[in-house]
Length: 202
Ligand SMILES: [Fe+2]
Ligand SMILES: [Fe+2]
Picture 1 (tube, rainbow, N blue to C red):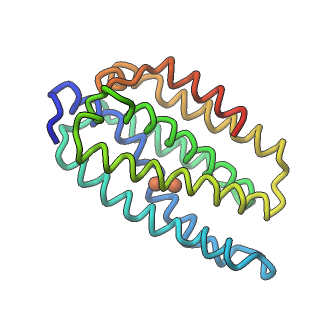
Picture 2: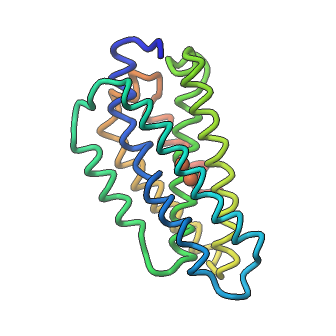
């Protein structure tokens, strides 16, 4: 992959956060069709369902990357990420989609920084193309999930509050990864500002 030792370690340390949502999002979107009301827009239902295939692919791609990296310096990152994900789950599908959309929006923001010019990832053509592809897919997921949540009656101001909460929790998950993010050219403070600014609008 052409990464320096420190960049490879930094990516290995941050990857559990990026990878955490893939398997659970796949499950959510595989099951979504059976949970939708009978009169739900079939095109939107199909779009929601198609996200599961993207997430399945992302999981495979990221596993392939992980296999080429050193072990993460700390095992607690994966544990904390799993707990964060468990807290997103809820019975109300509209609310759950709102939260998943917020997580995907956060992942898009992380990937935007990871792929920014002059980062080690940007200098690695295979990694840049992989993360750019995932970022594009996640942007699409955000749009579809938000439409799905709205169609299920999620209130816009409640959606905005929920998004802020999810992004704040994601930012808190990333704080201990500051040095690892720095090793892949990402400034944690800049990323947090991006979460706050974009999170409020999205
Ligand atoms: Fe994904
Ligand atoms: Fe996604």
